[in-house]
Length: 169
Ligand code: HEC
Image (cartoon, rainbow, N blue to C red):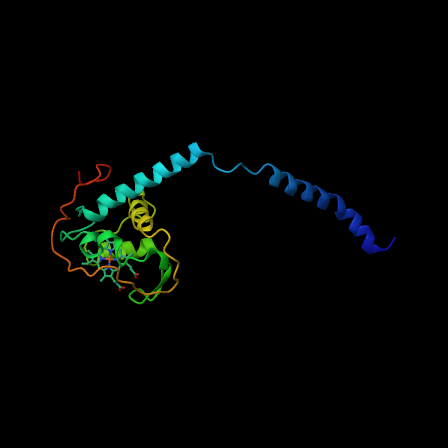
């Protein structure tokens, strides 16, 4: 027996074991989500998007020291282009994640305090904006796409009726 076939024998058993394990993992993969599970998932997301809506149209003191809300400049999440992130942003001279851009607007136009990027509040702002952009094709690198012309007005949030889930009841 030559050296090659000896080492083949040595490795054959572990290899077979790995193959069996891999197959077993495939077989035990979970079933597709049930209707009930999908309902819960949808409810949780809608709840987060509604919270994001309230925050988007309100001007929470920590997010805004000048009374401007996101919606003053981005009504209905206009010109936020979540489908184009991550992308290079000249003001930071690097590729930025969407949530970092949200913080940029909190700190600059709104002169507020940047949020913890993994907080549920940040996720809520993302949920709202992504929700409104569902079905929009991913356009990597597109700089801006103005979806609505808008003159920012200086005000403490906008006069909209909140959903009650967020902050501006
Ligand atoms: C006073 C107006 C103003 C307010 C208020 C404002 N933004 Fe912006 N926003 C801008 C401007 C101007 C830009 C473009 C900046 C650039 O590209 O350098 C921008 C860009 C963005 C972008 C990136 C869009 C892209 O395609 O590059 C996102 C996301 C965004 N804003 C989210 C928000 C969120 C969320 C809020 C509220 C927390 C907010 N903005 C509040 C003016 C504003």
